Length: 391
Image (tube, rainbow, N blue to C red; front, side):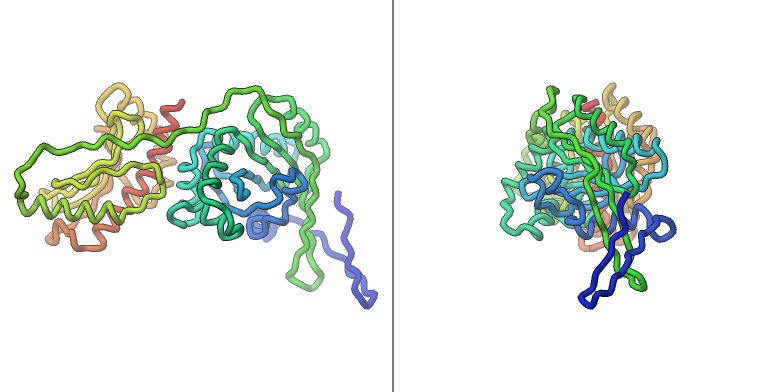
């Protein structure tokens, strides 16, 4: 329990700060927001001196185990996962520890590109978003060293896991001590109790954190994934040799796709792009290799429309992967910022009618439609297919 803080003024006046009871208006989200706005409010450096300098990456980072409340990183690339919790009963304490360990077990399977993609989705910052954020706070950070540091942290499971909340019961320390002898990853886990107090007749607040318990960093005797090499570029599907003079429609398609691909910015930096084609469609390869899954961007003259779809090959592996994706349909549909149709021929599709203006190469809305759809489909399907293959 925290003792009530008192402020002593220069004139001898004593002010008693009022403890905040987390109820209406003061929720886990309120606490999470304050900790995100001010990373220094959590004593990372007291837990481990290697984490004295941190910056916030994002809130609600999406993982296969659920959204992580808060993610921070050091300029050296070491990651911090924070779960905020207002304790209600002993069962909740045990659940949140299992939850934060599940997050860590998910992240150990990620590459830097996975982290970049998800941070970009949460922050809207294009390009190398984690590096852009850390450079704002620590301008001398070198990009290559930072990316290597984060990649190594992910591959080793070298994280700091922090559970921060009010009223953490002293009995929870036994759970932390138990973790000392488990063999999961190379991590530090700490519990930080956060006291929040309000200045009387003011909207100012006083936050008082204290480290309740922590594990010691142990080199655990387990096998962890090796640092993943960047995925190889997708095989280029070259067209047959043509006569030097292309038909006008072929030239138009090639010019459109060339311009489109030069401007296309995907959240996932490891997604390979195709070459510009002289026909009305191009394809982006998805995992696994061998064109078992891909995304097609197309123009269709018969319906005077354009669109994008994810397609799985009619093979044993392709059918199995599509069935697995269908079991995730509700989750995928809620993640996508638009509606898609799922068909029996292993296709997930979105289309747009262009009408009389077809093919609409000079229409910004056509380019925007194709780019936004392709980016969202890559974000939704590429990591899930990789996960299914790893499993």
